[in-house]
Length: 86
Image (cartoon, rainbow, N blue to C red; front, side, top):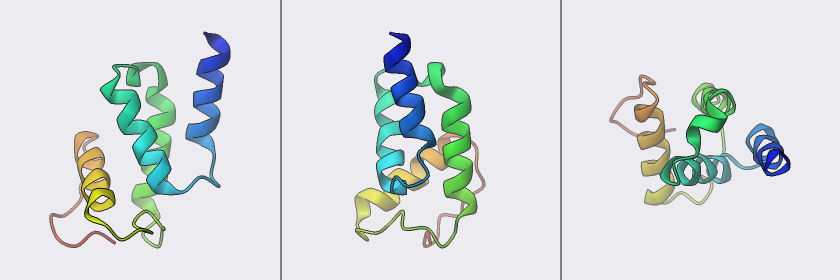
């Protein structure tokens, strides 16, 4: 179990991983009820995504990516406008 937790932590801390992949991983962890095991790593990954306005989060430029970023940032109490997401 500890080895699996370490693998997930590595995935959350992987700065080379596209932001959309990280958002989907965070969403999956929360939906499975496992997010509490990785609170610090999730907080750190979301902070990086929030602060990186030039990110490729919306590299596929689709509604799924925009909605996921908006929802996760809002759930974690980031001040994000309802307007266009960069």
